[in-house]
Amino acid sequence: MDFILHRYKNLTVLLVVIAAQLVLLAYQVKSNQDMRLIRVWSVTAITPVARLVELIRGGTAGFMKDYFILLDAREENRRLRQEMGRIKLENQFLQTELSTADRARALAAFQSRTPSQTLAARIIANATGANSKVVYIDRGAAAGVQPGMAVVTPDGIVGKVIAVYPTASQVMLITDPSFAAGVISQKYRVHGTLKGQGHGTLIVDYVPSELKVEVGEKFFTSGDDRIFPKGLPVGEVKVVRPGRSYKEIFVAPSGFSQGLEEVLVIVNGVHQVIPGATPEQVPYHVLPAPELEPEKPSPATVTEGPATEADRLKQHYLRLGQAQGVHYGVAGRIPDFNAPIDPPNPPTSSETGPQGAPPRQ
Image (tube, rainbow, N blue to C red; front, side, top):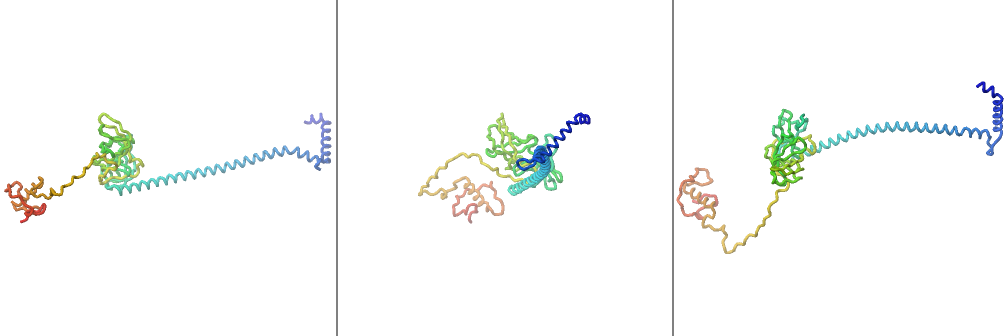
């Protein structure tokens, strides 16, 4: 640097002198707007730099502002997510409580409607096993539960009690492969045997191929198994297939439609009437009754003799009682119905009293 200044010393001095002269000139000279020229030059030179500085400052301030806004938005988003999670939990809890209340009302309504004596119970556990369809309820021998009792819901049958403990019972569901119950169709009154298959669909077996069963028809318990009272809903027919000897009928159970949490144990079953249409009746026509001729007496007024076998038998026993001195309907000895009697003259209306009364003496 010193070498350059030493080499160009005269030129440097010249440039400094010229710059000083220009500054003095600009300080003294004014522009058309009565403004010193040096000020115009200074502003013109500083404006791009100031614009650049302001641009950098504005961008930095906007970035920092957006950054802090994003921080606030992230915090607000986190808070809203927590609030939404809490509301979802409360909603699920309220829905669960509402479902429980609905099931409780349905159970109470079913208990008041059904003639059978029932006992409310809650499912507390499921049995382990690949094909096991067994649950445990919180009612046992202390509550009066016995093996073989039916377990139902307001929507349909669920299973039967297979083991009883002091405070709990084991229930086999109708979907268990070893389950069987007697059923009858609603429309055509077709009897069959309901069987479980290990999954959600049941099968009705032993229905002859010539009998009629339609898709959508409902099955009810028939009471033939002496476990389920007659008239309890079972399910709706989904598939009907013809077979060589028996139809293949697949039924969707109706007792599981609302889930299994609360059930009813039938302590004392009473048969019910199966709802729905009865089998079609054969139409018949009734002819008008013939008019009686006014001059002929009514057959009911003819008293010439017994008109039917029942009347002849009645007169025979009356004569038998008269012969042995026995009055029917009065405590005493029993007549000998095999003893012979003399055939007297037929009694007239004045000799015999009202129907079923002993003859007048």
